[in-house]
View 1 (tube, rainbow, N blue to C red):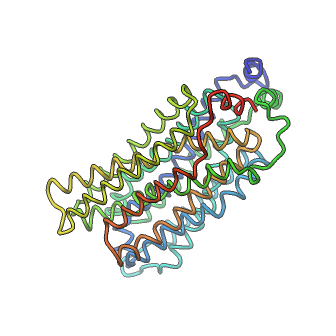
View 2 (cartoon, helix red, strand yellow):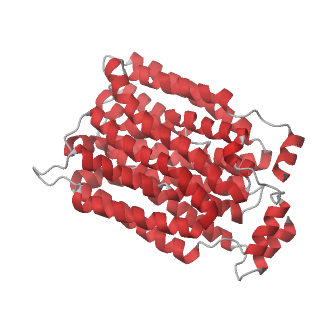
View 3 (cartoon, rainbow, N blue to C red):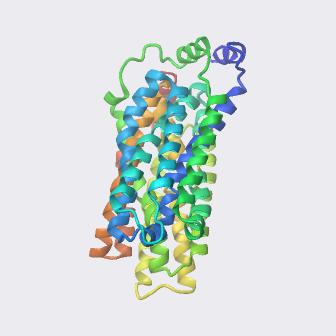
Length: 430
């Protein structure tokens, strides 16, 4: 393994330290797109008012963003394994920027001229379809440049970009929507993707071929031919990711509505709460990546997170039930705190889970494996905001959070069981 990474330092003029630039590009790419798919839902109140839609329409347009990502993830992942990270990431970032710029120009309310729900939904669908390229391509690049024992931390830093970008969106997009309208919202997001595209063009390169081959040989990947699509272990991790994303995405898409309508929290309080969720998730992801690298317990950590998330959302449901007559004062603060704790727990495991996915598949097939996980995750992003409005109309907020708790618990038997230390080491080497 040491000889393999010496090759990275001496081949093709790209030293081993270049991997940190690659990680930086992966972080920036994910943060830019996360500011869109996690940030736009934080403007839910302004979307509802500005586009004259109800909760059902709001769930539809937000769900279309997730549907676009879910549908496109696997094709983008397969294309990444065939074309390489650089081409796919550049293509995805620049076309996503173009789609957002088109929305800023043509799909925004102007006084009495309000676009219908169809162009808004189609615009967000296009953003999702094009932006789905970012996840797998940046993840495969990180897996190619970092070795086992470092990948958990590297992938968790990359995945930290999702809450970091979402936090940036939560802090800025509601204010932009309130004061400058949605042309500013989409325009700023387009600029972020375009700038990140420039950094990708400048710094994102795959490892020199000889070094990449040496790394693959050291990891025992030379004999690897089976597609991750045929690996039940990869599917179990991917499906577990999808199920455990339900409580996370319930917070991302509808916590602002919950805090506003049920908790009577103002715009500043909502933005602060959602920013705290994303910031806490970012810190938790970095810590969990480093911790599981040191202990080799990625599977056990994922299973613990599912149980903890289930408990926190069950508590949120009980507290919301206690305030069913109307939340105010101290109860409002408690509800906001529980949203933060539940949201952080439901997000902390992402980098660990995606590292396990890519490790099971091997670097050469990492694009496909990561795309499988993202397909499940973003299919959840499509279904969750569609399901919450009718569920809320038929029941109440405590029931919504109780079902989120149940989904977190269901992920426990779906994730593969932890391997013993000796078997884990053998599995990593193979």
